[in-house]
Image 1: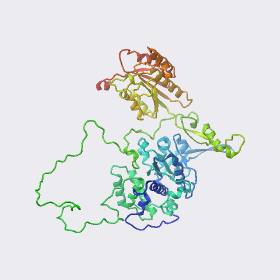
Image 2: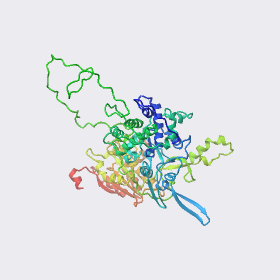
Image 3: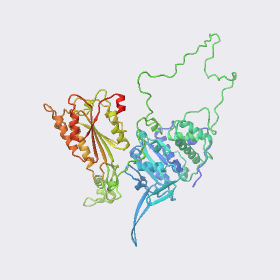
Image 4: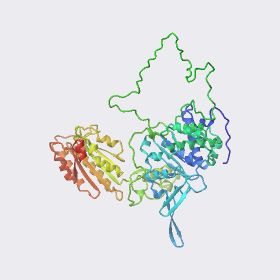
Amino acid sequence: MTATPPVPPASPTPPHRGAAGSADAPAPDGLIRRLGLALVCAAADPALGGVLLLDLDPRLVEPVVRLFGAVLAGTTEPARPPLVLGAADRDEDLWTRTRIRGGEHGITVRTEPGPLVEADDAHDPPPLVVVPDLARLGVAGMRAAVQLLGAEVATVERSGLRGTVRPRARWLATCRAADAGRLSRHLLDRFAVRLSVAELRLPGPAGPLETLFAGLPDAWRTAAPGVRPVPVTDAALTRAQQLLGPDTGVRRQLALVRLARTLAALEGRPSASAGHSEAAARLIGVAVPDRAQDRPEDAPEPPGPAPGPAGPPGTLPERRGAARPDPHRVRDDRALLDTGPAQGIGTAPGPAPAPAGSGPYPEDGTAGARDATPLSGPRRRTTGPVSARGTVIGTRRATDLRDIAHVRTVREAAVHQRARRTERFTVSPADLHSNVRAAPPERVLVLLLDHTCREPDGNWQETLAPFLQWAYTSRATVQVIEVGAADAADELRAGSFAARSVLDPRVPGALHRGGGRATPLAHGVELAAHTLRRLFRRLGTGPAEAWLVVVTDGRGNVPLRVSHTGRPAGGVAAAGIEDAVEAAARIGAMDRTRLHVAVVDPGREPYGDLPHVLADRLGAVVVDGRHRSGTEDAGD
């Protein structure tokens, strides 16, 4: 260590509790001090290398990254620019890097360690990995976080590269508390330091670093990289388990104990006590209840009871202010009947889960569905450069001339035209920005739901179970097109939405929506044709397989012209049905090597042949969607 921090004097309230923030301190200032102490602890101990900030304002991501880089480097600026991970990163881009060099015998290609592990064995300050949105991190980035965070040794075996490194990088990730329930607990538990910073407000550029470390000893920041861990007492281990609860995971307990020993080491204490476990819990936002028993060894004993006559052995002392028994009152030994806990009547829902933003573990209070295999992705084709494939989700500063974001580039160049003082519009290399693209889907499920054909006892979720199961196991994206919904924004037009998977809560909501009056079936079939055509037209990025499932009785009563113009005109007759059949013929002409179509027939009478006519034009198979008993369903 470059400096030895002074040992604070002993007091009934340890000084590290105030550093970690308390409930009595003002929320913004106390939160800033807690964030500064959390960054110092993460820089001091590689086991605390994962920092997760919940509900951080997106405008504060860059200032917090600069501050964390300054803590790691020991100066006002980070030693190297941070590595930013997002949705489009691949394993080949993170673990390896290809170098092309020219020599006497021609061009040679070498495979070197990638940005994740290239600086792990160096003597420079630890590198910084930044994840602006953990919920949108790609599968490759999630696997890298699980493998590196908290690990003492990591083995890299890729094509042309094999080695063992000691991970030194620190990770700084942000995530909304409402999105934490959709992430893998295996991934979230890798982030040992968590803070809910929804109310964080950093000061202006005058002195953010000084304000961040206000109230902390000056020697802590410079000595943090050289702090050695101290032993942990049994009282600290027991207290950490009590604070987190008996049902918590081992990783959370280890994270809290490691944070406690780092706080003790920063204070110069020889070991971590139970008080340090409480300070670590307050730092990350875990509630610390008052305890009358099992106090830490460095805290004074509570004052004993006032002197007075002692009761017989085995009796409890009287409470102060309790009324004394009246000797003239008749004693009644009859006890009241214990009613037990209150019970609900009927089918009322149970207690509501904890709010998503309460505490550092919002995933515990989320009851929504989550992906069972979030760290494994489907096999993807690699036709063409990866940077030019997929949906555009943002922009970043360009590193080459591929997939340039022209609008963002021109906007950046226009800002500096007056300062450059050139006669013509000039674009500098610093103005170039490229598109950030999410990985394109390999499989797609398109659902066309006609809500006006729903029977009162019908169960669409059971009928569509095989298609939903296929979409779930193949990690397919879902496009839902709704026709004739009771709460539709425009009853003359079909509505649609795109979901990342069948676990999106909007998908089951669409399966149980009520029916309305109008049935713009022709417009819904036309939207399905446009969606499939747009997917298959992407050269090299189109889906490998797609399913179109149409649930309808074929009774369309809104012509296509009315859906386009929004103005009803005269009698309809069979115009809506004819337009739907004509639009279906365009889908029937598509390539069937990748597209499969099914029509679910609800079996309504009369006109029970309309779904078969529509299926014939679509080139689809017909699925019986009539409601059956449980024994018949099981037999099918």
